[in-house]
Amino acid sequence: MTHTGTADENERLLIRRIKNGTVIDHIDGGEALNVVKILGITGTTQEALSVATNVPSRDMERKDIVKLTNRELSKEEVDRIALISPHATINIIRNFKVCEKKGVEIPTLIEGIVRCPNPGCISNTNEPIKSKFRVLSKGLCCYYCDWVITKDLTSYII
Amino acid sequence: MATRHIISIGDFDRSGIDCLLDHAQQIDSKKYDKNALNGKILAVLFFEPSTRTRMSFESAIARLGGTSLSVGSLDACSMAKGETLADTIRVVSGYADAIVIRHPKEGAARLAAEFATVPVINAGDGAGQHPSQTLLDLYTIRQSMPIDKIDVALVGDLRYGRTAHSLASALSLYNARLHTLSPTGLELPDTLITELADKGMEIVNHDSIEEMIGLVDVLYVTRIQRERFPDSASYFNVTSSYRITPELLGDAKEHLIVLHPLPRVDEIDPRVDESPYARYFEQSRNGVPVRMAMLMDVMQ
Image (tube, rainbow over all chains, first blue to last red; front, side, top):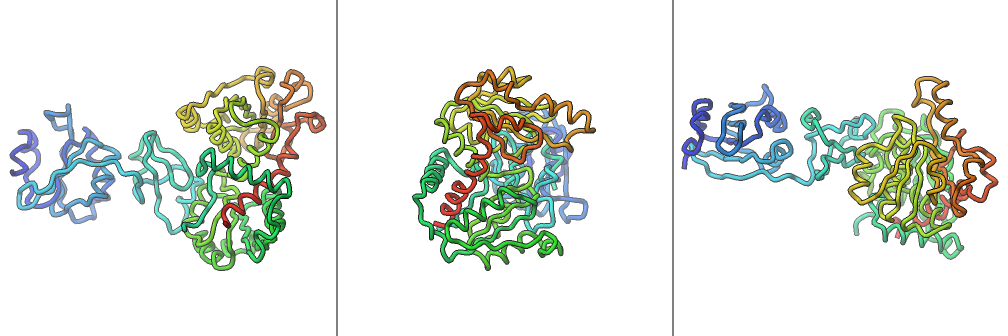
């Protein structure tokens, strides 16, 4: 199966096929740039990156798509995406074929991705630690100070 | 076996708390091994001023036959030179058999536990956790009544007061009903209210002490800090309406107890000290047996 074979017509028009890499599909509409941010991809990293936002979709009203050339995301990276887009699906592409297809799983603990909003938290000092959050149903709970992030998660992404 | 730490009251379930309080009661009845910490050195690292907590921990260590090792003054320690807490803890782990820490940053004790190779007890981290205070609060309540299904009033600064937060969380394990009275802007944080409600705790907000006084078994008063207000006039306006006086206690239940983590400023009229309701000095004294039980718990 090739990954273009199942793609929407509009998607094909918007983004070219990739030979090797990762396609992140079914991202909640408007969240693609946050997905890119949470994966630590900046203008200075090496990946060729394609982003489509608010693409019409059969399953969702609108979806975003991110394609990363020559980079296969690890399980830990994939699961970070669940924090902002729990319905996203990941396709690992090798030689134009979908070799692996997986959903994202919400992790129980995330490290070094989100900054604690509490200015009094020890994780916001020069200590040799990464920020750490337990993922709870009510939000993200700082492992150190118990501060709970319930909204605007993306504004705290490091 | 994993090193045992006491960082947050949330680390305990109800039976864990009950077990520790039972032990404190035994200690209070002089039924304990006075040499339990014989030959042990305990580092008392206080990076913030403290009178009661520090002295009661040092007293607890001495009563169990242990030796306390402390930093002379905050200016004299390596952290004043820019050393990280992580490095300080790694170093002190080599000098002592356990560490009691107070630090101005929230989460500092949790960090200390990550880097320590010996047990860590949190003696208060910023506006965060203060488990030994909560345990001695519960112990003091239990001396007067069974903790189960009681009505507890929290009065004062409930937003920034860490003792109130920890006590409320612990009381949720005992099916207590919470009554709150606080100045505008100093109410319990929404996240805590949600957490308590999720645990099934009933929370009733009140507008005056008169309105709640006849309903509660425990009146827990906390200090309202001057710096939370824009000027002295508004501070005095607010604090005067939250002051506990013998007259206000006229409608109280016979078995009511009044608690305060101390130090108090104007929150409780000194005339209340002589009333049968006042338990705050006893509460402060209870810090020693409760902290002895905590020390023995982590040093087992």
